[in-house]
Amino acid sequence: MTAPGKSTPEAPWPVRTLNAKIGDWIHRLGQVWVEGQITQISRRPGTKTAFLQLRDPSADISLTITCSPTVIDRCEVPLTEGARVIMAGRPSFYAGRATISLRVTEIRPVGIGELLARIERLRRLLAAEGLFDDRLKRPLPFLPHGVGVITGRASAAERDVVSVAQGRWPSVRMVVRNTPVQGPTAVPAILKALADLDSDRSVSVIVIARGGGSVEDLLPFSDEALCRAVSRARTPIVSAIGHEPDHPLLDLVADLRAATPTDAAKRVVPDVAAELALLGELRARCAGALRNWVSREQHGLAGLRARPVLADPLRMIDERVAGIERARGELRREVARFVGYEEQRIENLSSRVATLGPAQTLARGYAVVQRISGDDPPHVVGSVDDMPIGSQIRVRVADGAMRAAVMQAAEKPITRREDR
Image 1 (tube, rainbow, N blue to C red):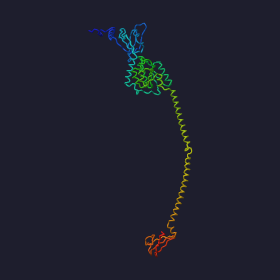
Image 2: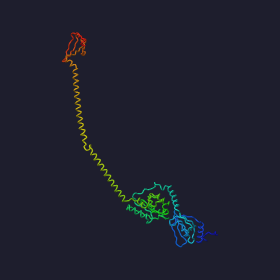
Image 3: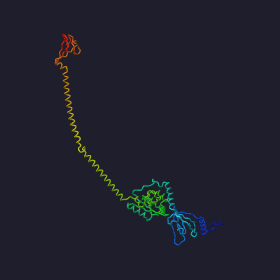
């Protein structure tokens, strides 16, 4: 026999039984608290039930919510699509259609402080992993071949980026991908568009743009999956969210943060008019600098040529020649005077030497007596004692010499005292 409550091919359950059992299991869960993002609100006047769609912020999973309109009215802030909320309710199973819903009795909006705290925790996590490191920032190309733009359809951000970029450089190629920029479908759509543009080799830089908004509206741009996808991208990415008070995490992980979509277009695409004006200015400055240099060098050459040494190169030589001639004349005169003086002195000395010499003495009547003795050379005698009788002598006078012999010695003269 089949156990009670068991279904078998012989005793299958009818649909109502299966739905009833499923309903029993679901109703056993009791009251639960659930957090999510509202994607749809359906509230018709005069009805006693309002329907909402609650989506998981990090997954493509949603849940149908039913509640009394008064629950929505009692909420602290008006509920809108895209709002993050916390709900309390009991899961219910509608057996007629086999659908599950959450019957909500209380709705609490997630406060901005809580959202900012969660973003801050994620910021610290990504910073610890190095996703915000400046060394990972890729430089933007000076003149991109193509500019990818991810923004809302027909939005002011798209208009600003495209018009400003094409106005600055008309030949730039714009590749626009329109996606939701808020709400639960924004992150998946942005990730898909980012992957498409990053794989396009003709796109040199990607701009993710939105024209600002509240903290809740900018939540997709602080999504962890988006931040990691931006850090892995091959193409440089510019964040142009346009929200100054609070910066989404995309601003920190992107290669460049622009204050507004217009600012992003100015940073990504150079201004052709400004570049041409700069080229003209640089050419004018180069030409002016070259002319000034040539003029300065011409003035320098003119100054050098005006100097006396270059204006009349032979003048210094002529001046030196005249000086040399004067010096030569003075030298000749000094030499002549010196030679004349020396000649006169030599003449005087010669006269004195001649006066004191033997020839002059002989000329005055004196004679030089030399004794000749055998083979010995003649020698001058100064005393009669050196000339004994019979000695051969040589007597030299002024006009010649003669030989003689000593025949007799004369008496020595007596020298008187008074003659001394």
